Image 1 (cartoon, rainbow, N blue to C red):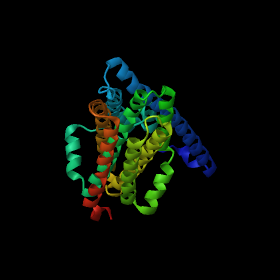
Image 2 (image 1 turned 120 degrees about the vertical axis):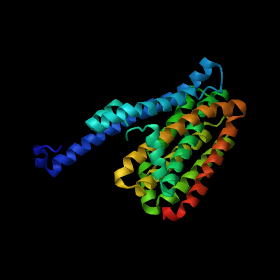
Image 3 (image 1 turned 180 degrees about the horizontal axis):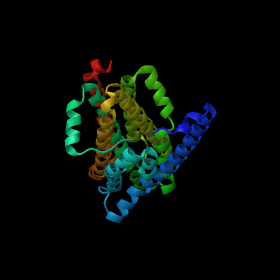
Image 4 (image 1 turned 45 degrees about the vertical axis):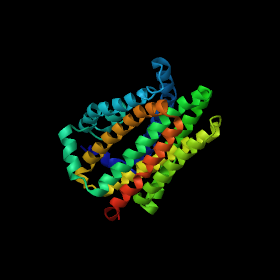
Length: 293
């Protein structure tokens, strides 16, 4: 509801409020990003030590993602009823969660372009979380310190978020479909770099994880734009919420399965497998190319 005094706000007042809001959001993201980097670095290592199994090292990452998805239901309802400020304070949700029937209804209404956009985001999340989760474990196996692993993960997290303006500008200029292909190429390059990196080289691993983060950024923004451009305004929020659910499940699966892949085969196998999955973005886009145009 609009308050009468809001009409008296000058352009200068509005700009000042907007700048303050942006500063608060940036500060919140910095702290949450720092926590994310620390959790990624230490969580997998603690799980490996406590559970005595590399295969179970991805459990913390999976539980983190599942917990985020579960919390979205309550926090989403809070945001819808009381506004985004209480919602952000309670847990940073974009939309409400959906029950099973709601998800089925959403899926039936999706057109090929929306399916393609969702697939890009899901594949991107799966590959990113899988490789990211096991990199600290791989580094520990090769006698790197926790400080070194933390540095690599910090570079990765920075590469996920700092290039967002670049990703957005590329989508604006070349369109989401071409940027989604670029995301696939970048993720393949990340997997290839990680697989070929000498075990002792922190620099090579940092480059691989930086590429992984940037590929995630390209995939996230191009996929989101594709969904936004091809969804009616009346159902857009519900559609994005359903996509977020699948993204969360993909992240949980990637984190959980990555440990078993590394335990049963190797980190190199995981990175090569991640590259192969990322390539799958291209045929999906080709299938929906007419609608994407």
